[in-house]
Length: 508
Ligand code: XMP
Image 1 (cartoon, rainbow, N blue to C red):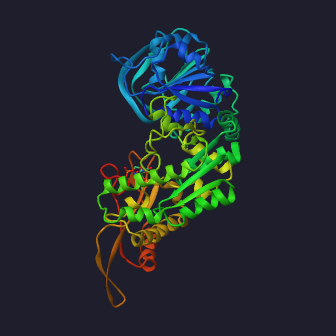
Image 2 (image 1 turned 180 degrees about the vertical axis):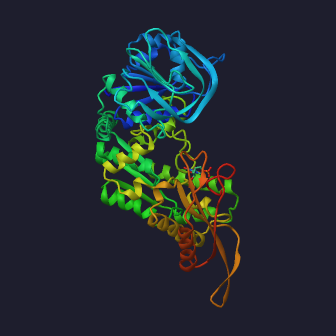
């Protein structure tokens, strides 16, 4: 994003940095997260239009608390400090941060003083979201206090080009928070023009420059990231791109066909469709242990992918749907390797390709917006995360074609009913699991002996933690009766009410 004005978000160790970056982008300014230990010259070299210091869990008065090169204040670049970031500015520029009688956590009433620039036009009395114990008791010379609360005499302060807020404007619980960020961008003179249309144009140009007249391949997993990456690269280089879709036979009902339909028929992308269900079932025969199953699926997947890719002569570039959170997690913006958790167990490291990663600056919701703008259907753009080994880890015990067919039918009913209830976009993942046990039941006059099926539906932000979704009883009831009536082989339905931790999202 070379010519785009960029706001750097300096990360002081809270989970808020990503949220701040996303909010700045929602205000139509590109932003990226940077570490707090660069020198002022290194920050300057990134040519920021403005800089935000994020919150953080430490106290600025504790030894070893993160600081920033004070040279940053002399760069003349507008700076906004949030929570810890605000306290750090106060302390480093000669103010005082002290421990007051009480901290403030959660919704807090704040009074805005007249005359400030940042909070101009906002209600004098408003609620903000706080999370601090220390507070700024004296602002540095040249600063004025522009808001306060009962326990924070300095809830906001500013000088000519530096501002700080003790509260969290980035969280949705601060009603005027987004307005603060937008106002700050405006008073900092930053044009708010970054849109998904610009992103697409920039990335098309970048991909063309990188690939030239070369050939690129892209492994489609059926997931959102590889789908959007492929669509974008296809827009840039057309027939120089070939996609490889290794169809394991372990996808959800109709999803394999939909990948082929969308890419080959609608988007006109050259697609090698490796129909490998039989090979996967042969390899999985008699395998019951979860890790052994994952390994078997992963190895075969790679072999088939390599075989298909090897048939594409002169392919030098590998398109990957790496996203911004993957880049941040891998620690360095420049050192991305072939995504280790990509698809089934990752592609081998010795594959000799140059990576093309057109989504590496984007968050998931932005990737979805790009996908929609490129004409991908909602079924793909809003697809839930799906494990590379697919239904192989949702069938406990041996995986057979019969069990996959049963599970696909039950799983489709779960999806259909959540969609009908309008709940699908609030739920992170929802699916059915087929355990390796049988239960006795009675249907009509007949005793049955069939599989139970377990419905799993979770809410989550990032899959690191998750909670079971409070699906209304009526929706669960419809799912249960439809599954039992419509899926031969299943005679009982249970709902998994385990959070993560202690459970995982998947069953294997
Ligand atoms: P767990 O079950 O560990 O899953 O709570 C966390 C998230 O990761 C997904 N998952 C996978 N994704 N390959 C993937 O690409 C895999 O082998 C794999 N295993 C689990 C899971 O669906 C959830 O979103």
